[in-house]
Amino acid sequence: MSAASLTGLLGIDVPIIQGPFGGGLSSVALTAAVSGAGGLGSFGAHHLDPGSITALVAELTSAVPDGRPFNVNLWVPHPQEARLRPAPAEFARLRPLYQRLGTPVPTSYTPPPAFEDQAAALLAAQPPVISFVMGVPPADVVDEARRRGIVTIGTATTVDEAVAVEAAGLDIVVASGSDAGGHRGAFLRPVAESLVGTFSLVPQVVDAVSIPVVAAGGIADRRGVAAAHALGAAGVQIGTGFLATTESGASPLHKAALTGPDARITVLTRLFSGRHARGIINPLIRELAAEERNVPEYPVQNALMLPLRRAAAARNDPGYVNLWAGQSAALSQPVTAREYLAMLTADDANRFTGV
Image 1 (cartoon, rainbow, N blue to C red):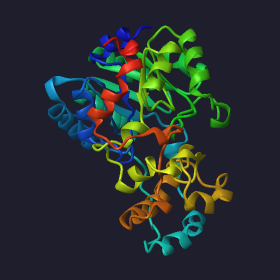
Image 2 (spheres, rainbow, N blue to C red):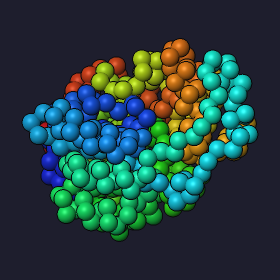
Image 3 (spheres, one colour):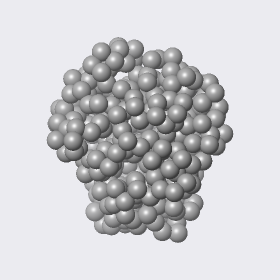
Image 4 (cartoon, rainbow, N blue to C red):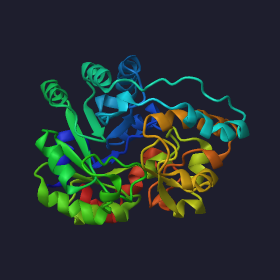
């Protein structure tokens, strides 16, 4: 499908979506800046409770200029997650790291908010666009979004997942190649069987579905935008590049890492959350490399690591925090979101955007 099919459906000027970031990396300022400049700004809300989601949509509605559309993202949970609890040995395993960073060993576990309650709150708040990763949302969620006039976006890491997204009735599919930073959203097969690069994934998805396809993963400059167009994508979703911009919620140490030489090498790791995610290699990843297969699943590992990440961030120590980044992170620029969007739509990319 053409770029016009995507921009018309979303009500945006240029077919560029800012990738949603979870865990506090999203910001209202970034979402508003991207939407205000003609793209689709996004906010990752998977860590928020229903009340916070209601407040978030109200804040975004006020912050995004001229009634422009914006997107709020949720994670679709895997069936077993609600039953998981940490074992005592898992607290003990990380005791040396807690002590090293001077933070108390957690004594309790609070599960994340229930997806059903998050989705109900988000639908009631009625943002213009809702996107999903990690799976296909239940049919009643998709049906209610359509009834309320909310555009829905699903995320796929394989062709089969893209077909499932279309079959579920979602309006748009993001084809997320293994080049992408942050968490891998594979849901039909294990991550190891779902690592398809963007250049291989996008044209196959374009051939397999009839809804607009958005290319994601390893796209960070106007050359990547033009390449996505050549592959048949109707638009692009860019995460890491926007994470490096002035308005993002990433810490100064994270932004510095994205624009430094270490960003040339990234790795998939389960160590920070229990799910595979791509980030810049740091001392913690190297130290615990042998534990990759042994750490508990999300959300347990995420809860166990959260105190360590917060303590390291407070000390401005990049050695123990998750520095999420895609494989084109080294192309990131420390500029404002509006400036970055203008760079993405210049020169060769004009053939894609139609401007």
